[in-house]
Image (cartoon, rainbow, N blue to C red; front, side, top):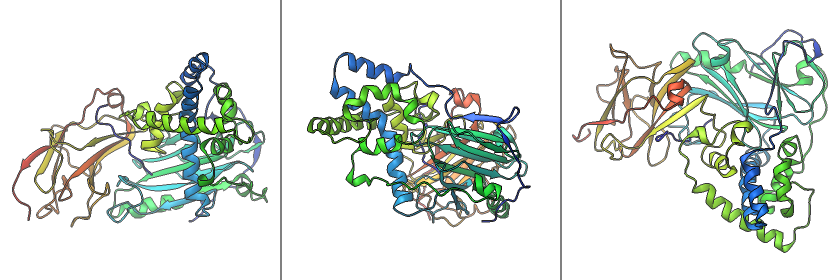
Length: 470
């Protein structure tokens, strides 16, 4: 998709009846992050070809391209959890819609409340409890592992209003499952990135969305059962500034089953010490480790994929492409949703190919809405081209979508855009824009097949006047 961009996104306990336990049973939905060991993947084929040529420099580059997503996940975890002493197995709730006052994440959406955090499954499973939601309320829970593969993603498009209890365990775990658990989700690594979204229309709807957020709950299995649990696993986290990418990747691979899934590939990289017990690196290994990083990162950053379908997904999806392709998704859209759940298009230029500039022009666009699956919605959000953030305006309005716009008689929608908000206070189809260079992101939550197959196209914005702004 030519205009698709990779956008990074982003209390009261919900009480349930006393749970009873049973072994994993017939009728219980059991989900695993990857259902088979993949021995015939594209990365293995590429490494095999380099090994046949006895090209250690090429193998070092391929090793770095494999390790990049793991290393970036680890460094992100270290910076946001270890350095800040942020507790694991807790939710971090962003309880208000992001607007111009929110500066932590560029191009964040203006549609949903956000739930973030990290699970640690090393000591015991963790259970996520999500309440039933009201009709037409979009919600989604998304998890990713330390290899930047999606472990799970589910919400209103799959379940409607129905919530439930979802138990996350590391592959190979055996134990009793509470009767009240709706689904067991097996993952490859004990450290799991969590991201939740709850639609918030603003105004009076915000209080309803916040009440729902307060009922999302995360507990260890023992806490869920009201029992004393094991002590959390204590780790000696390597400092990113005092280690190289091989050491940090090996640290991540030392837990869980990722190393088992990747063993056939890692066998090609043993000469670097990757996927092996800690070693004292030789000078030649250190030279190849540095060379692999330089060549690998150059290929990753210049790979230039512009479609999230190519770079974000599950293990099964991302091992069908070269590792540098998957790594580009990590570089440009870390922790992003796969395209089946959300697709994005960015508008940076108008219908004449000129950069969007609110100091020079107003704009309009009339379009047929993007087809969606049940439970989805879409919206346009305006951002400053200088800061990549939303910008203050007199209406405190930053997005327009199918829940806020009034359609035309023929079912199309028209949005008018200007940096001058005078007289537009009561116009639901008006979107304020910055008084300088700007861009918009169209988000399509649960896009339909026509969107996913590029049969539906967004319409570029058209200049409608050149008069000076007030």
